[in-house]
Length: 262
Picture 1 (cartoon, one colour):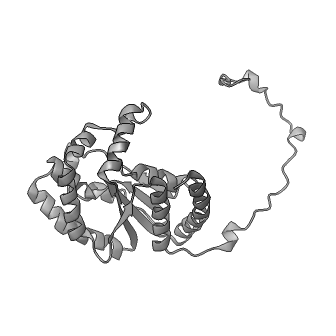
Picture 2 (cartoon, one colour):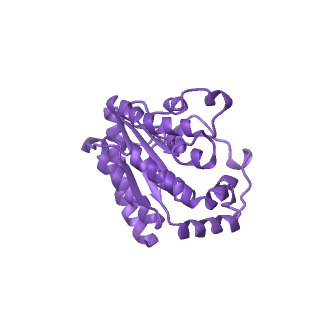
Picture 3 (cartoon, helix red, strand yellow):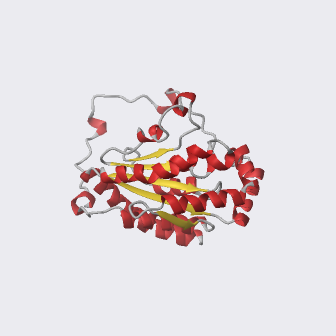
C-alpha cells in the first residue's frame, strides 16, 4: 500500500479512534487487545500506529520481560492479571499469556505438562474476564517466511533496528515448522466463540495496521458524543504585556545549543 493512501485512510480512522476513546472513558469500558505473531510480524509497528494521536492516560502498552524467579512459582496468569485494564482503559499487550502457547514450548522454556495445562486453562481464564465485562480482542499477525527473512536482513544491516534482532529471534528462524505447528494447535484449542483469534495478513505492514484498527472499531461499541467533539470557543487570552512580570530573556536560561542554526 502506498504511503500517501495509507496516511489519508489513517487520518479517517484516527477520528473514529478518538470517538472510541471518548466512549471508553465516558462509559468506563475495559478493553484488552492482544498482539501475537512471529518475530518481525509487525506487532510493535501496529501498536505505535494505534497510539499515534491517542491519549496515553487511556491507552496503555504492556510488554513484559521474562518472568522473575518469584513469578515462575506463581499461577501462570497472575503476572498478567495486574496489568489488565480498569474501567475507562484500553490495554495493548505486545505479546501476552500466549507466550506459553507457542514460544515457550517450542524453545523449551516450559514443560509439556505446563503447556497442556495452559491450553486447557486459557479459554476458561478468558471467559472469566469476558464475563466480568472486559472486551477482549486477540490478533495473530501472519507474516510469510520470505517476508520475515527480508525484515530480518534489514534489521541485521540497519544499526537503528539492530536492537530488534535477538538470539531468540535467530533461533526461532530455524524452527519455522515447529512454530507453525504450535500456532495451529493454539488456534484449535484457544479460539472460542467469546474470544476468537483474528488473523491479520501482515506482509503489507501499512494495510495490516489499517485492518487492525478497523477490526478494533468493529468490536468495541462506540457512541458518538457530538458535544465532546464540537469546536471549542476559547476565552480571550489575557494580555501578557500588562502583567506585573518581566520574563527573563531566553538566552539567559540554560538553553540547549541550537544545532540547526542557519
